[in-house]
Image 1 (cartoon, rainbow, N blue to C red):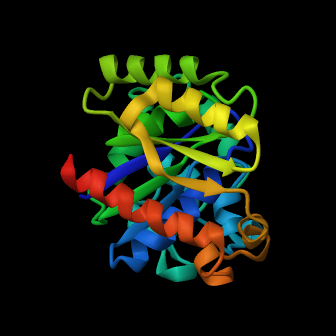
Image 2 (image 1 turned 135 degrees about the vertical axis):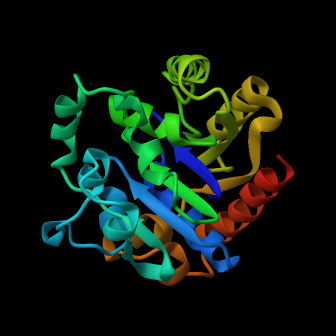
Length: 253
């Protein structure tokens, strides 16, 4: 099995799902096999990759319940990415799993025999049992951070949870990097936030910065990655660079 990356931030609207689907697209363009696992009940990665959530028969819910294996749940979607989709019914699964044995390991067990270079997990914007499953299954985490006021708010709690998972469930979990998103270099605030994040995370901050970009924001509404929607846009160039940087970090350990 290859490298599993959990993409998470408990704050919504930071470019988490945008990062998942576009990082996947550009890793695929690098001739890597890529699986996206959508464990956010909102299902934004599912719809962002062009899948009609109303027509799903097998989702992440069935995978976590153990009623279906990865090969039965996978769909091939845009840019030849493989996807395990989800819908809002996943939210009810957390209640079902509360009293289940080894409930934190459901996703890890399901992915153990998967043969992909990269598995990218789109996590919910909350520190829930679904997120814990992602952290337990992952080799590393990628945290998108919006370059706006209160950018670091909640990150200390997130990192505390990561440390708890590392201590008790997944000792090999590493921080792959922090990604600055929705960056507008014309504003003093963006530069101040960038400096603050670099001061806090040091070389864990990716060199790649994702700019504010209308084409990047539009693409998911058409069920397309930015590579398909507008491969010459600033957003596309940023995610192409991010894919190279992610791969280099993974390869170099």
